[in-house]
Structure formats: structure tokens, C-alpha cells
Image (cartoon, rainbow, N blue to C red; front, side, top):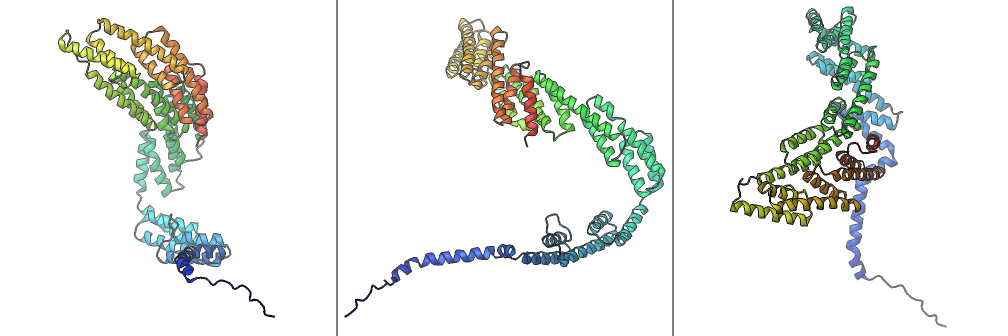
Length: 501
């Protein structure tokens, strides 16, 4: 009986291989490249000894090239220390560090022989850090001291120090006494003179604190600390300085809350000089600069250019972080100056002045239709109306326009507050205040706007948006410095800002 042959496997077609071989070659090349790039990291991960050997070899190379100690990690010291950190039992790393120490000592000797004393001091420090035998280090250090003393005219130095102290110039006397003590550490006269100079210097601290000059007091305290960190008067004076700093910060915040921006700017400027890195001071200075910029914009809208410019100078110098607010106010000031230039009109009615009046009233109507109450300066409804008033203050059309605008901006404030459009409400309020500053209804609107800004600031503070909350506080403070809750919110904002990195 014949058996039926089983099924046979199909042979791969040559065409399939030809179609796929470029992809296979590409994958192989990629694998080779990856293995080549990762060969050393993988080897060092799998065989740590390979990395240690590489670090030791790099240390030997750096030592041979004279790169003993480098802050970028390429020095022999750094290489050997890295190898030692990977395996503290490797004697090669300890031996390498010892060779670096001996090389540093040799460099110190050479620098001393060449008269490069500062460099010799640095090499000696390195040798000491690398635990070169003390006897060897002390020998070179003694030679260095002798060389330094040979260049010191001790009698002249004594006279100069005593003269500076007698003149009451403690800051000049202290460095001289420091040199004297370095040359003669056991000289009682030098030690007593330094003590007298320090006492004279520290006597200035409390009067400076009473005068509010925290920066000068801080400089004197730091100078005293450098010359004698353990001076008996330093702890009490440092505590007094900290109390004065806290008191001046409270005064600055209170001046800002009450709208006394010039006083706040002066106090925060003093504080920034004394503690330039303090977060609470920096934020208070920024809020003051923002408030000054807001005031400058109002002054510019009222064509009080000199006052606006002065406020912007103070704001710009006080807080560079408020540069955007200051720049916007400067732009408004320039536009307002351009608008003021257009108010030069003939004093008696002429055909040209009639055309000018008609043009200003038309511009007023267009600005009213756009809702441009006070912005941008020069093209706003307020500025157009001011120009018309300058041309014909008794004209019935101008007077009617004045009444209509006052009613419109008052309604605008209420409508914008109802819809929570605070920027629009602020613009309408500014136009209302510029147009009718004595309007009895204006005070109530101002208080409601301040409260709404505080509510917005509270919401943003809870969301962690410190900058937005700070701007809301500035807006509320400008509107109503005595607004209920303003002081509490400002204090919480300061604490939150100090805790935010």
C-alpha cells in the first residue's frame, strides 16, 4: 500500500528576503551603535572595578600634568577621592592623594621661593587638607611667616594703628591691628588696641538703629564679627538690630496700607539696602512700586506730569521686579503728554477753534461708544472732553457732554461690579474720579471696589497665586487705604510670600 506523501514546508521566497534585508541591516547597525555608546557605562555598572581603574588612571594623568585641585572636578585630588569613595579599601587611591599632598607642598615651597606668598598659602592649605605630615607643613609655614614678617615695618604699623584709633577711625584701625597681631600674636598692646577699636566701632550701632540706618549698623556688626567673632557685645547688638529691622518693616507696611507711598518707599529702600535678600522686604518694595505706578497713571491722566514722572523714578529705583508696571505707566505718561500738547487752542472763538471743538466732541462721542473712558490717554472720552472744555468751557454742548459722561461712568462702575469685571470698573472709576473728584457717590463706589479687590486677592491667595493676590492688594489699597480687612490680608500675604521659595 502506497503512503501519501505529507505536506511540505514552503520555502522562503528570495523576493521576501530582498525586500526586508535593508531593515535588518539598519536594525543591526542601530544595535551596534547603542552597544558602542553604552559599552563603558554598562561595563562600569556591571564591573565597578573598571570605573575605579579609570578614575585612578585619570588621577595619575592629572597629577603628571600638574592639575592638583580643580573646582570642575578634573583635578587629581577629585579623581582620587572619587575612586576612594567607590572603594575605600583601594590603597592606590590613598597613595594617590598622598602624592597630591606632597606635590602641593612642593608647589608651596616654589611659590615661597619666587615671592608669591598668597599662592604659597593656598598650596599649604591644600597640603594640610590632604594630611601631609604636620612637621613638613609647619616647616614651610614657618618659613612663610618669616618672609611675611620680614616685609612688615612693625614700628610704623604700630604708629599707624594707634593714630587711626586716636582719630576715632575704627574702620581704618582694625585692619592695621589685624596685621600687627599677625606679625606679633602675643603682643598685648596689639590685642588691647584691637579691643578698643572694636568697642569704638560697636558704639555706633545703637545710635544708627535709633536713626533707622539699618544698613550702616549691619556693616559695622559684620566688620566686628570678622575681627572677633566672640566679642562680648555682639549677641545683644545683633538682637537689637533684628528688633529694629522688624519694627521698620512694620512701619513700612503700615505706611503702604495707609497710602503714604513716599514714606513706604523710603523705608523699603532702607530695608532693601540692609537685607537685600529678605523675601518680605522684596515683596513689600514691589507692592509699593506697583502702587506708585498706579498713582503715576492717575496723575498722568490728570496731566500732572512732573508728579507722575517723580513717582515713576521712585518706583523704578525701588523694585526692579515691578518693571512691567512702571513701563506701562511710563507709556501712559508719554501718551498723556502728547494729548496735552493738543490743548493749545486760540483764546478767542475763531473758525479754526470751532472746527477743533467739533472735532473734539466727535472724538468724545466715538470714545464713549467704544467705552474708552480714560484709556488710552489722548484718545479717551475724558481727554477729548478736557480738550473741548479748554476750547469752550461755557458751551452748552460741552456742559451737556460733561453731565452725560459723569452719569455714564457712574453707571459703568455699578454694571462692571455687578458682572465682576474689575478692570472695566477700575477704568470707569478712574474716569469718574478725574471728572468729578468731589462727587459724594464716588466714595461709596471706591469702598465697594476695594472690598471686591480684597475678595479677589483672598481667592488668589488660597490658590497659591501670590503675584496676582499682591496686585489685587495694591489695587484695593490705592482705592481705600483704610478698607476693613486690608491690614490682615496684607500680613497674611507677606507670610505666604516669605514661605514660598
